[in-house]
Length: 416
Image (spheres, helix red, strand yellow):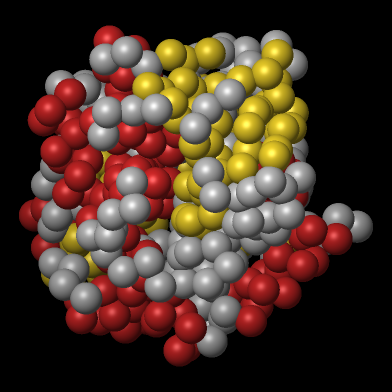
């Protein structure tokens, strides 16, 4: 039996790996020249169940409104004439109630926690190197007001089983000595998710792709999917610019490009791109860089040590499908990073990148299938794609095999 996976990012490659484990003959189609060159290329690097609080919260509408006239907001709304943006934004706003935020957060956390446990298993079984770090992540707050709000959010995650400690500024320094007394003056407190972790998603994905090939998978690069051939309730072929591919089952894991292709099969996916920016700097002295990853919550800036590098990421911007960037896009992030980590590395040698997160209004991915019995969905993982990837891949493989997934998929199955 042959399975065709559309997409060679972290979602697609982990899906290929799980299908291989189930005995499938697997082919992956990827439009770029290597795995993980798009959304998975230079993301935040955090494996963060402790950061699963949904973006669609009661605070989000006010932040988006402020972003129309201020550039320092964590979420930035840039209105356009794209009707898909307005449809998505309406669904997002309807999820910005306290009740729905709690429900969506619990859903995300359970998937993230399950996925992290499988990531550990995959790394142990496949031997993939990815500059991984255990030991927890720090979520920093700059003001007493935001710290109190963060503790309320943490209570939702704690009620679901998250191991999160509330830290004073002094305790933050005990967790990571890079936060010296002078730097701790900027911090009102922090949450410490003790089982969260980090690592390079691109390195992981490319390493796992090598493992998949060694186990018999075919990965076809520079192969862009353009459409489908169907017969009755089955997809009989996938059209590409290089020719027609056939398979017994097809999995869609094309991130922000999933909706356009799914629409050809009558599937309406609530996914829209949300742009983020990252910079990666070489460390000068590891003692001056963060030992643990985490997030400056007030500025939505993530930081993550990766071997001899530090990855910094920030911003969630609604600007369509553009991945262009300019120096001014990184100015606020650089200022925030230098204030926290003035000697972390050589900021003058930063590598800059902008990528698109495939977001759903609720923040959780979409599984299942539409009207075609052999066409499956594993897409829409948003800003938690690296955290969710291994669990989502196993769920997709279980659904294809008609097995009951290990976690409840309430709200994540297409059309249900």
